[in-house]
Length: 193
Ligand code: AP5
Ligand code: MG
Image (cartoon, rainbow, N blue to C red; front, side):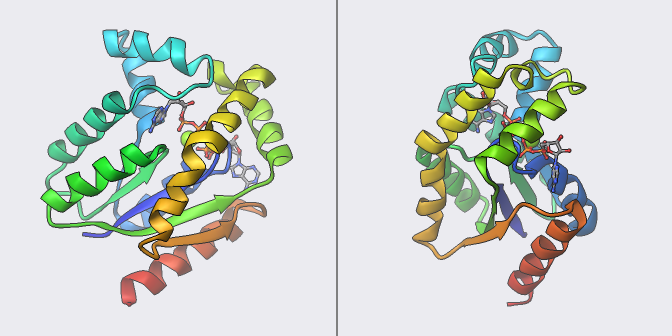
C-alpha cells in the first residue's frame, strides 16, 4: 500500500491536487471535510452537530473525525492506498492514524505539505465563496478563524511527521499543473526508493 497525506492550510489546494493525484496513482481519496459535508447534506445528527462548529471555522472533536476515518479504512479493504486530505489536523489525530495504519500493517509513506502565503489563502477562499455554496467561505472572519485554527493546532502535525523524516514541503503557488508536477515527482521519488 502507498498512503500519503496532502497537508496544508485552508485554501492551499489540497482538494484540487487530490483529485488529480488519485486519478494518476489510483488511491482512495479520504477528505474529512468532504465526509463532514456529506453528513450535513444528509442532515444526520453528526452532521448537524458538526455544522455549527464548521460555520465558526473551528475544528470538530478529534473522536468524531478519527471514527469517520476508521470506518472509511474498514469500508475500503481493496484500496491500493489512501490519500488523506484535511486529516490529520491535530497531533492526537496523527497518532490515532498511525495506530490504525499499523493495525493494517501499513504506514504513511510521505507527507506533502503545500506552502501558501496567508494573503493568497484568503483571496482564494473569498473567491471560491462566490460560487461554492460553502458557508465557511463567504465570511472573511470565518476564513481567518480557519487559518488561525490551522496555525494553533494543525501546523504542529508537520513537526510530528518531521520526526520520522516524512515531510516534503512544496510551494503551493503557481499554476495547478506546475504544482501537480512537483507533487508527482516527489511521490515517484518516494515510491521508487
Ligand atoms: P476542509 O474541507 O478540509 O477545508 P479546509 O482545510 O479549510 O480547506 P479547503 O477545502 O477550504 O481548501 P483546500 O486546501 O482543499 O483547497 P482547494 O483545493 O479547495 O475542512 C472544513 C472544516 O471541516 C474545517 O474548518 C473543520 O471545521 C472541519 N474539519 C475537516 N477535517 C477536520 C479534521 N480532521 N479535524 C477537525 N475538523 C475537521 O482550493 C481552494 C481554492 O483555491 C479553490 O477555489 C481552487 O480552485 C483554488 N486553487 C487551488 N489551487 C490553486 C492554484 N494553484 N492557484 C490558484 N487558485 C488555486
Ligand atoms: Mg478541501
